[in-house]
Image 1: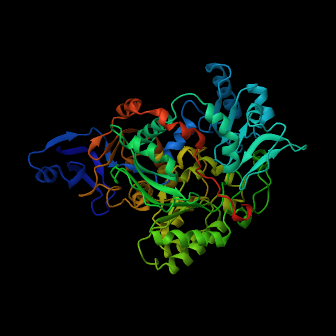
Image 2: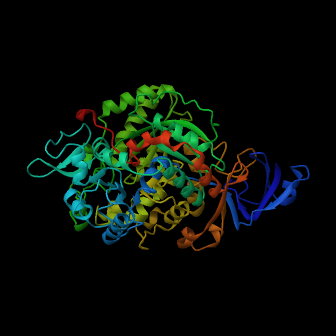
Image 3: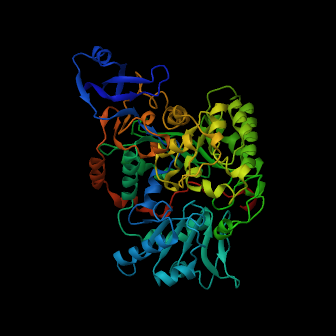
Length: 576
């Protein structure tokens, strides 16, 4: 149906026409943007609809996420204990007791989001969990995705009480002085192995958490996102979700480089505008909150780092997951296939190595100067000149304001010296360099909050209200671009979404207030009233209810995949 949509104001994110009164829509696409009379003239006798929104914007885009696995980790039957849900350890203990009280004795329990830094508590090893949960199968996953902790019942189910296994390649198990396991695991191979008995025993529908997470992102105003830990076993889940009525998200897939078929083409009956494969995901270093990022500056010896078990000193190149020759081999293998390369990297040493490898591969495969849009993800500890170098290579940066918002007070003086910590997530340098910065929340690592990301980039205020590194603030236009058109550019979908322009898909978000009319420190308080996809207003309730039609039993194998691998390491070749 053809119609004209109006709002109090339309913020188009098109610098040629940043404001409009109305938008004309035919089918799924925009045919005109401008005054009400101009939009009426573009269609024969159109219906005029008032959205009721104070401001209509392009739908927000999260350029780096993990919707299916994040839902499985954080939604029921799992329990979410991240610091924004449980800010103190006492709050975590309250959720533990709630889980015991509302489940039958013997029910397996899974918790996601423990953070030793923000919750200021030592790791919950088996002895600790046993004292609370007794003989239950219990799993606690660290919020970074790099650590997991289980009760003795899990070790018993694995047969590891009397016969503890050797460490797997690329991972390790915590051990007591006598060599027995303490119930902790570090890095993907170890974490997923130790978690398996719990995940396999969880009750409920395995895909339902993903449905709820899609709805969660939609309510935050997000209409497009990515899956940055895609593997082929997830394909049926993404196809099933895309086929549901009022499906709220367009998804670009980034295939994990650790999968043998990561370079294979993606074929699906789902329209490419809803689901397509864009690139390959690789990992350089680890997580700042675990202490394994490749930084040139030392971690400090402070009460915060000691509580979180982070070793003081320079982590350096030893935290890299790839030796340089393996990194080069991966790029040489997949660059000719035409995929966009996307590299997780936080530390400045890690970014130097990644940019060296990118530069060599781009030159070798004659991609310099082309529209390749290879990516670097997170880049929290990047130096200013590194953004300029990335821009010279045509590399784009997907940044995480959440790192600064939630951990900024700890980064400045508790994790690193002020010279490094205050400048974490250098937005100003990134925009000045021209790396098309986009913003993300990294799946369940932080709540999907595009407007809070914008507020954080503009104000440099942390969750406490403190300001660090104010010289690294972005302008409001830049920050809004990072959550719309720049994010579309990073996903290669800017021809279809990211701004309100003729020819593009009619994807919108309705806001309760104009971001330009509220105090910068209150942008995150603006409410999202709804989203539109392809000219149709999303009915989240309809989407969730329709998921009951899905044969959830066919997705039981998803349980073995566990929580999201958003920040996971890839095994270093030297350890394989």
